[in-house]
Image (cartoon, rainbow, N blue to C red; front, side):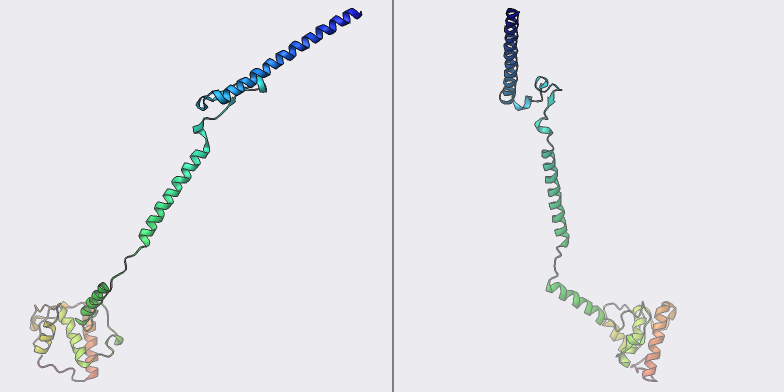
Length: 214
């Protein structure tokens, strides 16, 4: 019995030595494969590494360099920044307003003043007048304002005073003789304003404004 036990013990020890050597060889192979993959294989070729022996599972896949989300996110952010800069430039262009020069302002004011000075009541042909419109006007100006309505329609005047006055206006074109002119040529607004101004004139002086001839 003792001899048999000794033989069995030696046999078990020999097997254990073999298993240890085999395990050492396997582990050495795995480490060598890992080192070769990590240092000898180019990055572009590192798509799949067999790791079944080490982990007992499926092969592990490593993403290629072009698949990282970080690169895409950076590009998108860059594009957003560029678009924002372009929008800012557009807004700045819209906001910038060229100021008027002093000369332009003066010219506009003078032109407006000149147009106003051409008429006593510039709007008498388009809107109904009220007492506030004629406040401060003299008897002569009231009479001229009344005849201004007729002059706009091209009436000529027998009175040299009126004719000379309207001849001095750039807008006046005398084309219709006084005898041929009728109120049918006036609009309803012009008729009412002429009547209103006539009432004001004769309320200021029962004889009205005395022209050199009429």
